[in-house]
Image (cartoon, rainbow, N blue to C red):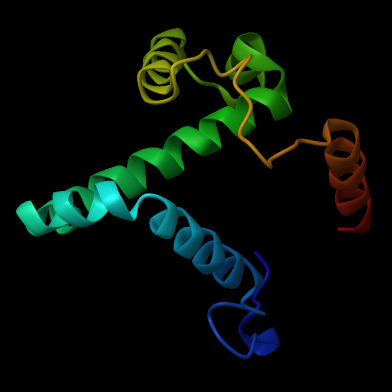
Length: 130
């Protein structure tokens, strides 16, 4: 296993690109939805804190599931390439549909694209170099 302690980044955020982009997007979203968010959070100030952990972990998990679905070839690919059980895949598909309203095979995250050929080519190159 590689040890990257000697190649530390200047901060845990790396160059901070993802954090900066998220903060900018969140500020725009919150400003656009201020009329809804402000009274809701004023009425239930603990709502944000109570739900944050569950929502964060669930959304992170479902986004990863969606990405894996597309990178390994859907249902059959998840079974063969990642060893996921049928029931686990069905459970994740159900959660995904409940959260996003569509099957992961047809859902598209706005602003997110997957370059499958580039991914496979890059992974092959990394494997060859290691």
